[in-house]
Image (cartoon, rainbow, N blue to C red; front, side):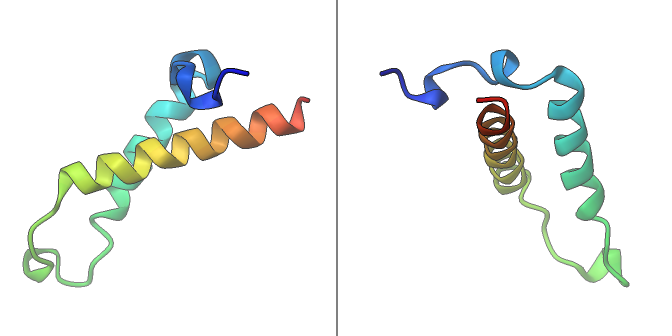
Length: 66
């Protein structure tokens, strides 16, 4: 059986969900009382978190629809 992650995310979730996850992760990066003193934003790590969250969402949707 083919692993779920072999399928493209675009085949598993809508572009709207994908974009919303990435936008919300970006917005969360600004949730500091002192943004200037928050340190360096690691966009690669944030993208990895968003990507993994998209796969989690896709997994949950597929399980719910099974």
